[in-house]
Length: 230
Image (cartoon, rainbow, N blue to C red):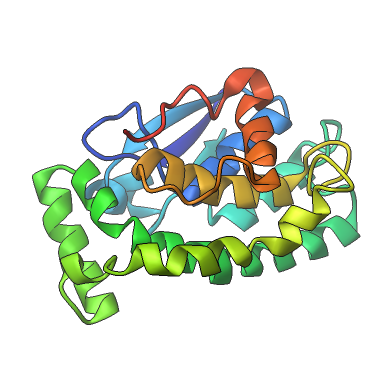
């Protein structure tokens, strides 16, 4: 049975951009599970599965509806143990939780501010109004002011990727010789930036960019099929 993945989009249904939804798209492909992406806009989220989820990603797998990206990954690992592991054991789950927190604090914090207006530009009018209201309440300032100075903060952001950069001197993926869920956590964040914004978050000669390119080519080019923002 095909799994349904409720996936965040803007005006263009063919450009899903949520970092959390991308984690699960990669995870489903890693498990070799058939899935269908169901496009959902910000203002449509309360209608997902009759209000069963307040956020996306959410999946329907037969009679089960699951939400929260990490919980979904754990569910897939337990529900399909005969398929390729997302974690490689309990230690891998613990590592993935660390990577999740690092990604949220290091990647999401900068990308979410630097790409804010670009994300707003991807949305339709109703979603734009919702997005502006919620983000201006979050940041305490007009939407247009949030990304100001992003060029001046870019060097520090790239420097913060040092742990990843040096890791890739020794191995091709965070998971080792092959990717695991921690790879999809970080790749999801960078795919969010790639799809939403033309801002150059990564330098072209960065080993992190090389790794991200490898991730985009996984599973028949799952990530590469969605073009980068122009």
